[in-house]
Length: 104
Image 1: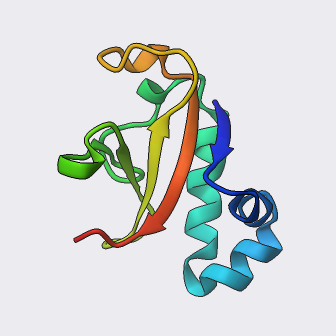
Image 2 (image 1 turned 135 degrees about the vertical axis):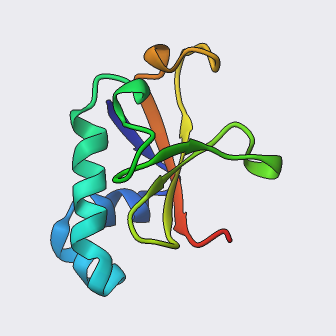
Image 3 (image 1 turned 60 degrees about the horizontal axis):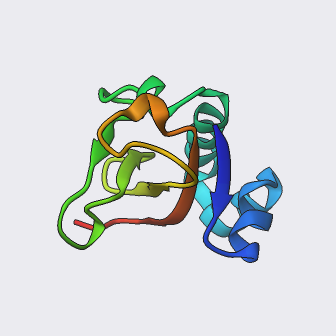
């Protein structure tokens, strides 16, 4: 999939493992693995709903987003980008990384 980012700063960080390590410390390797899986997938349906990475649809104010696990409590929050059908994950071929957070 094609990855987009919510800011230029995030783009710079998430495209450089050294910076991921600097900003995310002990979780840097898990984050790098999840980002690699996202880049390698052809569409969102190829990201499995079972751990890891446990793709799951979010609710409420994040209803158009998905969470991707990278640790027991932390998630990569993504949303579809470009042209897609929200009901068909095979059509979601571009995503935007919104942020990494523990939303629990």
